[in-house]
Image 1: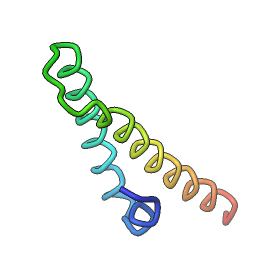
Image 2 (image 1 turned 60 degrees about the vertical axis):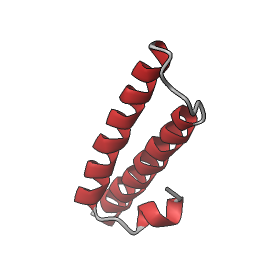
Image 3 (image 1 turned 180 degrees about the vertical axis):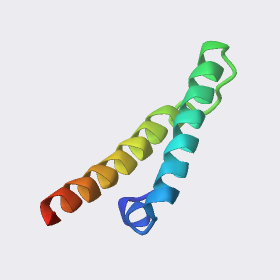
Length: 68
């Protein structure tokens, strides 16, 4: 998921996507530990998605606090 796509999401959608991404990361790590993971690039890609979501959430929180 690219940063432009993340910025288009609403706050509730961001929360949902963050929860899903964290679940995906957990599943990928579990599959890695049991040697069932085929695509090793899935872990860093999921971590980058989580970082993008958290970045957008922080940007919005900062913008709200400055607007007050």
